[in-house]
Length: 175
Image 1 (cartoon, rainbow, N blue to C red):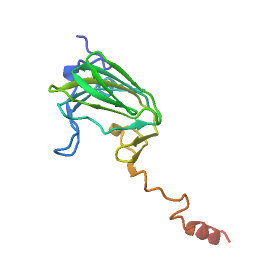
Image 2 (image 1 turned 135 degrees about the vertical axis):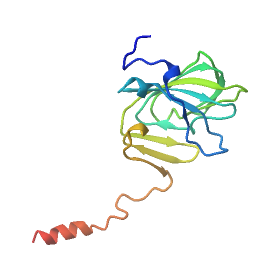
Image 3 (image 1 turned 90 degrees about the horizontal axis):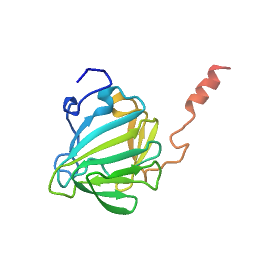
Image 4 (image 1 turned 30 degrees about the vertical axis):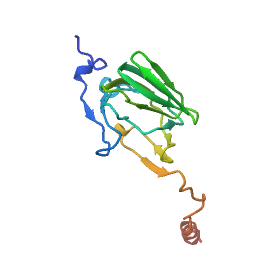
């Protein structure tokens, strides 16, 4: 095959073990095809998830939209309040917003292989309904930048911790 910076075969894309807690229900391998081909506005990765695991917690996006295509295997999709059996050849749309939390769980005895395509718009806010967390992301993980997770119920008043001491310092220095 001819070499071009925007073309790559899946076999040439490095396998990245997902950084999940040991002995957790999460795990798998990711191949970042979008990054490998120089994509800018779309992210696309191929995942291989072993039986009994999910690659990610149940989550939703406020900015980005995702599409999942099942390449091989069977799984249960949590989408909103529904649990749906999915298998090879299934396309799944995960629009942004609170009505579309989603998670793909390999409930079969074989590896699950799927493609995820996502818009890459930042900043992004994600929510994790099972754990009641909020994620604030200024850029993709591969780009670094501000990325933080917070407990949703740790809500604080807008002015909490704001003493105004810098305002007073500046006012005094201008006199």
